[in-house]
Image (cartoon, rainbow, N blue to C red; front, top):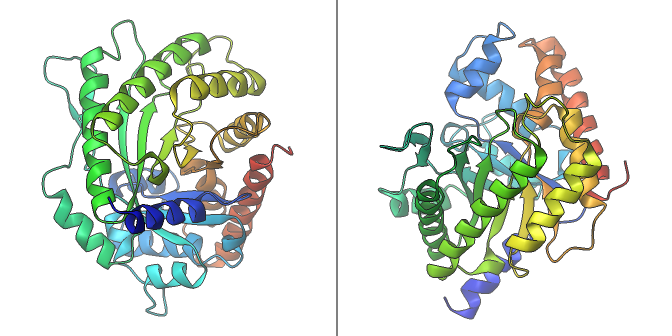
Length: 334
């Protein structure tokens, strides 16, 4: 890559990793969105999904707390109620447009309980289209279960390879890659077990990234916090989560990675905010930190909305309140 291309990537990273701001993950698949709607009796239609995303993306004041939004394929093509493209709405707010480009998880053959992330076929052409639609960064997720047998070295190696190849394709199109190797919350594992697994996953990922010569300053890591399993008897508190997460990151993440953002991964909104606050209290660190939550940013607003037009302003108030809390957590002030 020449210096101009590298500087363009670094500038995008800098805009995404602004202090006191985070990246909204509004990239849930239609199936996931449908499950959330079903629990509240909201019809799962394209128009309802569009209306819900409009509540979030067009919320006045969101730009004070949001530097970027990760969109799903459906959403990047949609418009608000006045016919203005969501991508134009975001650009006017100086919020960068991101896009989820992986195509989900598939069973890893001969590896029971493990998955491989997929979607590399045709990715360069899709990346070119998303760039033409306004995307400046992208996200790709892999997932790892913690059990007596998993994750295997094979699953770590293969998923790391896929994430690295995706990152190369992104950077070839002047798009910042966000790599997301999620260590799942499911199970009864201890925080110490989560710490060891997260170390293995991150070390495997960065070995692959180094092998493929991905430019680290033009890369963002989206990582799990180090958490005890949701079914563990005595779940670790926020301070323990902060300490363990920072220890793992310092050991495994190269100092010149452009930024580190955290997924919420099934935590409640309050848990995710408190744990992020505990991590941020460890700054200064080699990389800027930010939150990049999905459900933990959306849930309060979704409950307030409930599919009713009369509740739109209540939903936006709940959304902004949660954003403001995480902006405070980004500074370790809670």
